[in-house]
Image 1 (cartoon, chains in turn purple, green):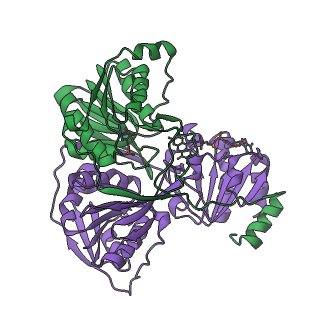
Image 2 (cartoon, each protein chain N blue to C red):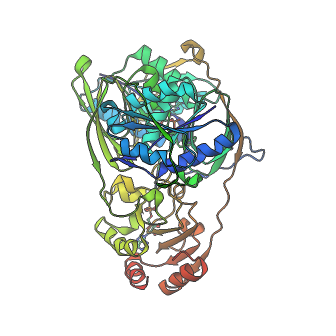
Image 3 (cartoon, rainbow over the protein chains, first blue to last red):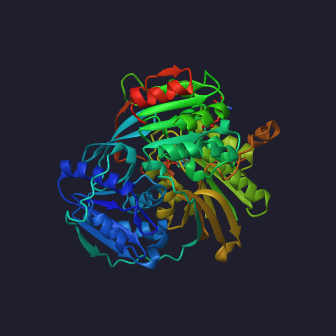
Length: 316
Length: 253
Ligand SMILES: Cc1cc2nc3c(=O)[nH]c(=O)nc-3n(C[C@H](O)[C@H](O)[C@H](O)COP(=O)(O)OP(=O)(O)OC[C@H]3O[C@@H](n4cnc5c(N)ncnc54)[C@H](O)[C@@H]3O)c2cc1C
Ligand SMILES: Nc1ncnc2c1ncn2[C@@H]1O[C@H](COP(=O)(O)O)[C@@H](O)[C@H]1O
């Protein structure tokens, strides 16, 4: 009855989401006992494995370091996890695009259901998860002997890092090499930004269709600089080509729950609210005083964003 | 090549849902239903591939109650050539849907299967990936661009995927599974003459038993609740007031 967590990493760095998934795994352990292990799969992932070994409460880090796992393509990753799953009662990953891509394959290969994007662990087989764009919360119970689960990071506070003094988990190599003749990596275009990751930022400022153009998103930059904020967007802004897809917040984009969320020129469609309504404090800036975003905003400011944003930047 | 498109009947995305008083589920009585928006994108992509001469036939499939034939007729009006309805009144979880679709794939032998990335009712985001694993096929999920090169044995597919950090392109051998993301295309609306014509297109009905699949799930829905309501706050009159509130009341600055 142990838990295996799939580590999330990019460019040799362990991504913050992993610590949230480990936190969910610790809660499971409290109810089922056993260990929490981490799987790091990729190519040249030694540093990632060491970072993973420092996460609090992790018993063992299993490392599958091989070219076939570079870019973590779904086919070999699914096969690898299915191979290892036999040692565990629960396999967990972040509800990231990697976790969502890989875990359902594992579930299908093991002939079990997957429970997507849990926000609460009730016990070893019962979980809460949002459905219908977060407009309802379902409690689901699984009768499968293996539970395959993706975890919504905002539902669990990150587990601490033990630091360099705090000792670390054992690191162990996994020999299994999946063969993959079906998919190959061609290229990747990742957004470069000095700003914090959307999912991890304490402050997020998002622009919507009201911003008018991508050029106007610059109006958010100065404010984001002053607040150390990440910049997000509504679907309408992404669809219009104003900003890249990785900035979309919502039901089908990123889920954020910062201390402060500032929605600028965003009407507040349910699909957008699904991605941000668990933020601690919400500010809405919109020229339409009837905009639904004001129904969830703690502080609403009615007016033209082109006047408000420069003033706000100067007064912060 | 033949393309299979999976479409799901779900609540219309504009509808505000209600939870049943006994907390057993969401109340769907007298609620407007529609094709899952990501499935509309899937149908559109398949039809465009046919219009470009890449695909020769587009087959739409759904699993669900009798009424789900409305969504199949919509797919036919949008340009699918024929439809398969796997009829069941039971709640079909993603794994069972994937098993049924895998059987349909076995029968139809498509070169490409296009699904939505996510059904907006359960928000599962599983079925395409599960189908790929069950059918032993590669997958291109969250697609924002799909390019087919060659057909038959040496056919290849390049899929650009919307991932957390940006975009990723992978190349897959055919046959393959694709799931759609929002930017793949902008679906058309069905025109009246096409809606009329769709009524005459072939629609095959099967049962899960015909396909030899158990629909019953290992998951039990114990309870459905409304989320904690967020209370609306106040309107502030100026930027100064906003900054003051954020500093001194909310203490987030
Ligand atoms: C399947 C599906 C999935 C979806 N997923 C998502 C998702 O993940 N995330 C998401 O965001 N959406 C999503 N949507 C889209 C969603 O339904 C809305 O269409 C979208 O959120 C609207 O974006 P918006 O608020 O920027 O645009 P609009 O609704 O057009 O609102 C623009 C707002 O800007 C205001 N405005 C205009 N000019 C100014 C100005 N000068 N100053 C101040 N205010 C101004 C207007 O008053 C208006 O309220 C999804 C939709 C579907 C069907
Ligand atoms: N009952 C169903 N009938 C047809 N297609 C389905 C069904 N359930 C899921 N799908 C397909 O799988 C996609 C993702 O659904 P899900 O994994 O349930 O979020 C949908 O957009 C459909 O293309």
